[in-house]
Image 1 (cartoon, rainbow, N blue to C red):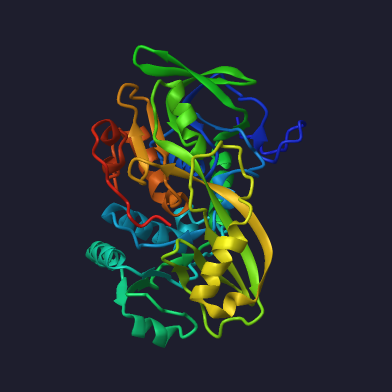
Image 2: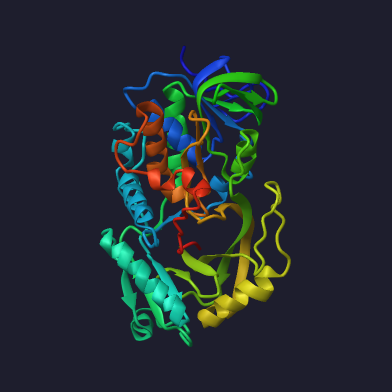
Length: 415
């Protein structure tokens, strides 16, 4: 039976159904954001796989999804070599999107607006961290290079560099990409291949004989499953608790502002990560995007998107103006709050099977770099589901068992 792509009578967005069409699926994906969509597409596009796939999304509008609150950027400047290689795959995927989606002529050509990331260090410890990270990146094939303050001033004279000891930049495949378009085409092509998207909420898991036998939905009841992927973003820990597991993933607020400068900079602005923790990049036409969070960064409720009063006026704007004096005169045009799904164990992805429930896989805890990692993580998860192991990039270092073993893989380059 072909997939039903019409908007249902209940007023749901196109492509969403109010209830599953079957009572049993080979794979149920909990979470229809970027990770769930990537996994669904890579499953549907694998010629070996012919099973039924159900994606369950609690917010079909995506109004509160991390995917739609992202700044949609990509970088290779990580401290973990595997993260560098994951981003390199994403960069190639973006630039070959039409071919990756089977040569579909409807799929647009995409590219990366490679303005680069510029990390600034203001302490001896920060400079040592940059040197160590750049060594990892270059070993993995990234084009990152270190910059002295004089070199930074020569390239971008608008910075105030008092106190800055060292910088690092890579302008190859680092910058903005159209994540929304990739997300849209993954969902569209997966639906056309038969994957179902249902608007419902997972309320429980039925466990039997060391497996997840069924997923309980708030409206549709129990849906039997062969395998399940927990790709619920900041709510991943809620799904884990249904299986009796404590997952160290917490929602953390991240604020974004779009502003217009009275005196636009005379050249392109890299995505600049200031030692204060504030970051800023160019949007174009005299507008810029800044992001940050408060000095206190507590876990919050998954539905808490309230703005932190005074954060812009007392912290972010002063940091921007101190680093780029031209930004003393700016006007905020838009602002929003999103969530990082922060893995407080080591700030890296949590993937792979539950240690006691082999048919429950996790895809969570990306700590702010999930969008750029979605192609490789979705592909790898689909490989594991279909083949029982990875066929391309080995993602096993990110498996869940490292947490129980107390074996962190610390990612130091988290913005």
